[in-house]
Amino acid sequence: MFFEKNSQALLRGCESHRYLIGQLQALEAVAPFECHETTDGQFTLKVGDVFLHDPESPVREAKVVIRNQCETGPDRLHLVIGLGLGYLPDELFSASPGKLVIYEPNLPLLRFVLENVDLSDMLGSGRVWLVAQEFDLLKRLRKQLYAQYRLDVLALKGCAFLLANEIPALMEKITALELDRVHDFKTGEAFHFKWLEQFFLNCPAFAEIDTADVLFERFAGKPALVISRGPSLDQAIDAVRDLSDSAVLIAAGSAVRRLWEAGVTPDFAVFYDANGMQEQLHGIPQAVLERITFLVSPFTQPCCYETPSRGKLLFLGQNNGQFADWLDKTLNRPCQRIEGGGTVSLIAFQMALAMRCDPVILVGQDLAFPGNQVYAGGIPLQLNGQGAMALPANDTLYAEPETMDTVTGQDGEPLPTLKAYKSFIRHFEDLAVQNARSPAPAQLYNASLGGARIDGFELKPLSDFCGQFSRWKSPFALPEIPLLSDSEIQMREHALLTGLTELQAKVREAIALCGQLGQAVQQAQGQQAGESLIGAIQSANRQWNQCMQDNPFIAFLLLFELMGFRERIHALSDPKALATEGQIALLHMLSACSDILENRACGWIETARQGLVERKSLTINPGATSVGTP
Image (tube, rainbow, N blue to C red):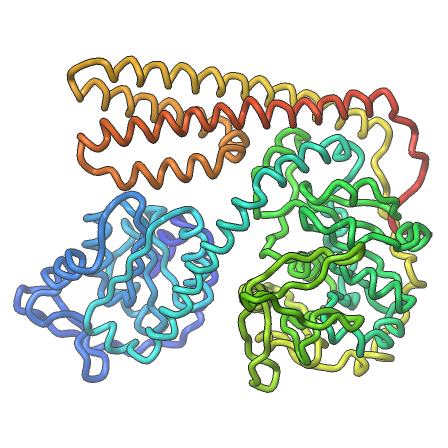
């Protein structure tokens, strides 16, 4: 009766519900669940021997759960375990302006409820998501947690009883999400200014580098080897060589060296990191690099842009999407995104999928240290006194201490690994699920024998593929990918120069606003009425928020200062605290932001502008060279 109405509401709320709706539509006729009228005239469902709702008063039960199990507010993310007949999410939707994620893994029950209960107002609101699989739940929670929403978990007694065997493992994974968020936050905080500085240093090169979109769909149905530098690469190297004329070879940056040592040159090399690139490229002959097309990110260490290569293409990611958004707007062309996921190997894998390669085979993707070997080529694991991995750095190896952990191997055995690698495994497994759901999924294999178990990939020695694919290319002779024309390069130079000039002006405006708002708050401090100070703080905060909304790139420049300020303000509930600590927090934030904009951003932008001015005077005709031809 209501299924179509609820389905349309879900799609209005978020297009991501389409897969779930398809699952529900594919169900055969669902037998009705046993309904019982409650004492207060509502209804409850009986599933087996369990009542999902209180037989006396389902609404009262929902109100008690909300009161005891969560806090309400616009910054809250409420995870409701079990939809039931919708009493709990409906009451919570009215009680809190936060966002709701409802997890109901029982598809027949979910179909029955959506058929018989009109939840369309709530489901179409844009702040409610309905999920039935753990994969979708964790993906949604990750997105909201990374946006600084604060999580609480609610469940009715009946729903918790039915999911009692699943909830403990689920809560462990949710806890792991939060640990990932903290780790990624610390990583982002550590690299934030380096990414920004290197983005502007690389900016002049963006005029002549096309985006990796030109590769998308280009190798449909062709096999791809995604090659990393794990220990298992050594045993697979002969098979890589044998397959070099029948598969696209995509190397994760540091694997290029091991391939070169073995006499193999990849077609593409992906470089992502903000440092360590000089070590990865050190000593590799120019004649080898000139046969490889580099895929680089906007904030990759600049030496990757300066190193001779066959050609370079820019990939734009979901991570730090403000870089990509600014480039899209400045150059007036939308480009597709590659999710980061924290490691270059994930990006290389996604590039293979974007190229429509099939099958896609992971090589050297151990994500663990079998036999206490860290990398191919015989680099052993070494620990410092604190138990962290501490390899000796040299000209060809960038190294710094990294936290250790254990992971499950392919035979169920525990293997030493890095803490970060565990999250990389989850990302690979998530991508495998996404691939399986796509209209034309690629076959996925893992030829990294002896490494970590990665669900969703069939384990198979690389040698088994030798002779299985037609020899469709001479090594390095890929379809042509034309470079940008002179006129296109000149238009991009002009657009980038204009965009940087506009950004520079906005930065100056933001610096001036910092000073104006700071003065307004300080002037209000001298007034006796606390309300005046609070009003000045709130007014300054509104103006500053509006400035950041209008200038998302500037907001990204100041990301961690703004996040720290929000954390401090969230903790202030009473007016007296807002009038004292809130004032201190706001003045500190404005001063710190002004300093960053004045002493960092202005210099970076001017460096990029000068680089473009110099480029414009030196631009020459690049001729008919193209990426992908010998």
